Image (cartoon, rainbow, N blue to C red; front, side, top):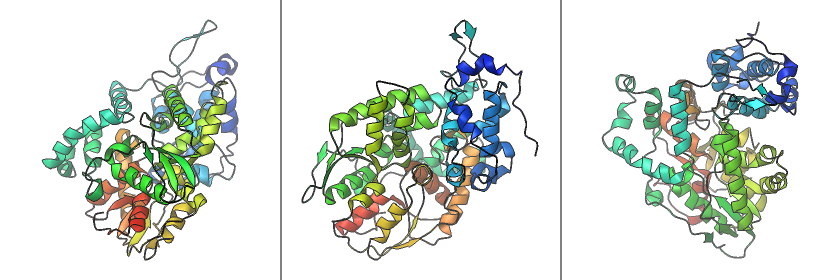
Length: 465
């Protein structure tokens, strides 16, 4: 199949080498791709459209063309923006291509603060991709001004709850209503979670230190997350309870902020670096053995701090030290080994692999091991489990059409399991799949692994789920 070259005039490679890829790292990473096609079946957007430029190797071709001097145009930017960043291709690739590094760099080429016109030795720096539309910039500005800041996000919940009370979030499921709203707004309302039930009904504020139950086995820091702490505070409460029950002193820094995951995976490199440095300082001061994370995207980003800050002499060592301490909750508990007794939970549970846990962190066996350790719980698998649900950070807000189609596919696969409950480890997946299940009329609660473990340890009923 012939592959298109990005639009626009070609610039001599030597003229731009020091501007676009001064270290040559991106060209080296792109050169690792042998275009074998193993990535094609694993790519959600290639599954949707069957277009070469909407596959990982197609996007790598576009990136290479730009690095070689071609000027990217609107269609090039669209193909790059359509990527979910799910990293299923990284798992599938036999050559070990670091597509994650390539797509994160490429996404920055269209951001306002990346590759803007400037001066370098008297030569104007070219823009590698055209600037986003005014509407797209406004949407992204709103997202990145809101979601990484829990206080602002809590303030935004009030109108969402009002919309739920008057039935607007249900009404937008009908085409005649949804078509009257901007696609991004319809997506926000459709994805809005219901108020927490049971133990999560009241806002949960964790103390800065949760002492271990019984002999202390470890001192761990806990990331509370942005979306997690606002929409799913019950998950954080369950996480701290499980860690304490397993003999951990849990340190919850009060002044922790966003880890930078959304910014990093959205191509906003400078913003991600600032948030990463703040997070590193926060957990350095906590003096902990490990930093436990219950959000797949956040854990993935924090493990990437080593790469993110590798070029900063003052921060490279500190970033590497912090990244080495980061563990997903399931990963940490599997390494630690259980001591708290488990009570039976007579339920059938389906486990959903969040992409940034399964593909980016390669954590798949540990959550299943922990679930199988609960008496009475029957674990069932989801067909095509490695395909993204369509959440992908902010993807379901900025690409609502394909995200919704992927959500429907995932919901169909989940419903086919006949499970009583769906278990995952990422709040974005919970929002996306819960919305898709509701749209198809399937009543199936979605809970975090921490909630399942907490219920078993406490011997509580699962009726509140």
